[in-house]
View 1 (cartoon, rainbow, N blue to C red):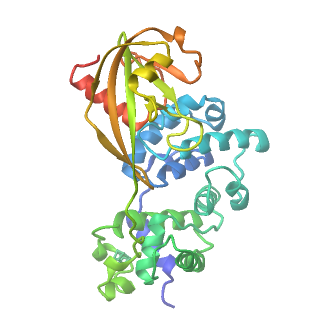
View 2 (cartoon, protein in one colour):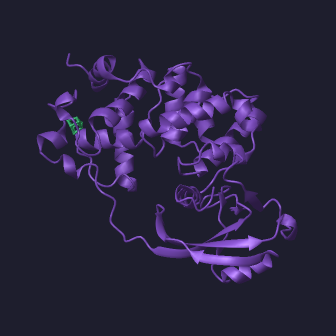
Length: 350
Ligand code: SF4
């Protein structure tokens, strides 16, 4: 009998798959869960140092559940897609409250927790319990779309349904944990988005996209739409070497992170006056663009030195004087790290 898809993949995995990733050592449901959330939208090589620092600071589910959101976001700063961190934090609190700290290894139950979708739930269950559960992350979508020439953009409902059906059929009952890791590895290491290494692929002689010289057409591309552009002024307000930061609302863009105050309807002078601070100097800094999934944000930072203290600022939960030379552990937005790095490397601030 010809070897099945799973047999071929597992034979490849036994020889070439990754078995030394940090979350594969001391494997616990908590560590696997953290890794799977970090790996959503982020590559393994980027995730590894973040994962190691994160689990060193929050080694168990209760340490994460009991941490403040500021600490959690601080350890996520730079990894992006911060809703992942907020949801993970909230989900650990839910597991502590509802499941006595035991992560429920059932796909439907896991899927009811914040931030865990169908594929992530299946990955955690299969890797941690060895039970059969089908995954379909970005890597797997690419592999299946190419091998079976499944047309269309995977964000399209019909294409997604076809990919899930194929993934379900192929997932074996035996060696479920290895299969999950194997298909993710094949996508990440061999069937890469650009320049797939087909001569190292166990499906080289049967991959429909390869045989028809059409790899570049699979998976189908997202229909192009020009991203809208928004603009904002960010105030880099400085007093005695401290920088005023404002906490973003808990949900939405950069939710819960600390950023520079923004003003759209007031001049910098008016904004600063409202905080009972006295403007001494101001200068525009170099503008830059930050691109989100749905729009570009053109940011014009203005550096303002002021006289005054926290005394005039009534909302202490919302504003914070951040000392870059002795930084508190906070989650910072990308513009804050970027502007502070520039000012520090030019010697403008310490
Ligand atoms: S043959 Fe090439 S395109 Fe097809 S699955 Fe393998 S690596 Fe991907």
